[in-house]
Amino acid sequence: MPNRTLALKIVKTLRNNGYEAFFVGGSVRDLLLKKSPKDFDIATNATPKEVSALFNKTVAVGAKFGVMIVILEGKNFEVATFRADRGYQDGRHPTGVRFTDAKEDALRRDFTVNGLFYDPIRRQVMDWVNGEKDLKKKMIRAIGDPNKRFAEDKLRLLRAVRFASVLGFRIEPKTFSALKKLAPNIHEVSQERVRDELVKMFTGPNPGLALELLDKAGLLKEVLPEVYRMKGVQQPREFHPEGDVFVHTKLLLARLKKPSVVLAFACLLHDVGKPGTYQRRDRIRFNGHDRVGAQISGKILDRLRFSNDLKEKIVACVEGHMRFKDARQMKESTLKRFFQRETFGIELEQHRVDCLASYGDLTNWRFLKKKMKSLSRAQIKPAPLFSGTDLLKIGYREGPLIGKILRAVEESQLEGILNHKNQALEWVKRNFKK
Image (cartoon, rainbow, N blue to C red; front, side, top):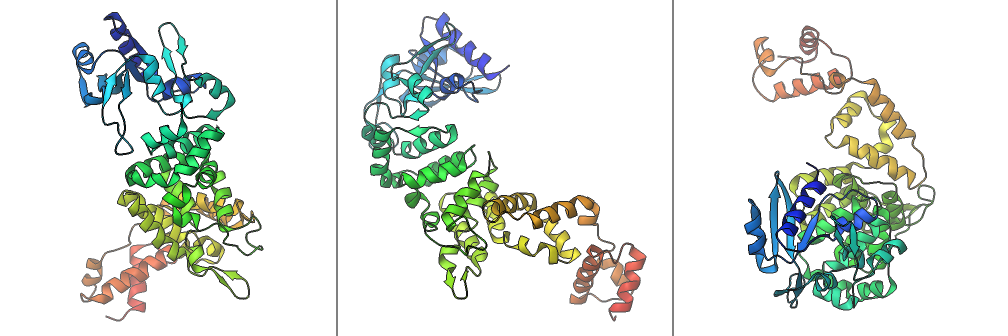
């Protein structure tokens, strides 16, 4: 059963038992924007205890804040009691709440476009915050005093940028002014929360806009100072007519549309090693910036608590992004090993947008696409023709030579010189003494 149907079922159950209940927050915003919400949150005047009594499966994830999870057909729905927050001490969570009515609940929320309530039975929007007006204006505006909203919950600083970039909206001037003033307070938010917001921004439909807004809001230098340092780092015009390293990165991100986490952060960080390797001799050079950038990227991703798997893949893409310039000079075996890389498909797309964000030459990209298409999986990564045991059987002794032979055979196999076991064994006898 679709999520909306199940959420409506929850609303009807609450209504049939004498309670108020509405869809709230992002689902209402998305419905009014003619989008399909992923999640449906519900607000009600029923207390957590009353909610729990009405449904078979519930989880008290935040009962003291009035938040319950109702489970229907294996799907989770957040059902929260109308509340007003009593104050904030940790810059993220209220110290306590008091249960109240729908209007006061709406007034405590972050932005007007997220403060809308919707009655799915009467098909009526309740708007106490002028959220519909701001949706039409494509505007992110804090509810009430923006300084107070951002002081209550510091994560809202990043959420403002995220909503603006994902929705393609502008941030209202007073809200933006407060955002810039309070940007340093983002350090009070955990790195995991910062990471989650950055992931949502850079894997959204407008990652280039996300980077621009982070910078203009003063948040970039706080959460990604290594990326901020790319600003003003000039590049050789014959390769980068578009401008400095930061401009190039922004243009590159603008070419992406809802990329994977690995592709998004590989593109964001691919030139993060350039500020530290800048040299000006015969021309501007950044020797070794790929290796330096990989090291810096690893530290950034550790700081933001990325998983080891994601970190390894992103770092591999950053470290390998300069290999593409030599693609047409690579040996057959080198090309095939390149294609074998787990991240090659991501790196190839990264190379494409990297080129389009600079001088626009896709010659190497086209060459690699054509070459890869001409090869079967078996040709790219052929099965070994024999094992070390086979070498022992024909008189070779255990030791380093066995490994050396196997590597040489693999190389010749990838070059297309060796294709059969007996042929390969005869080749070994001719080229390696026992």
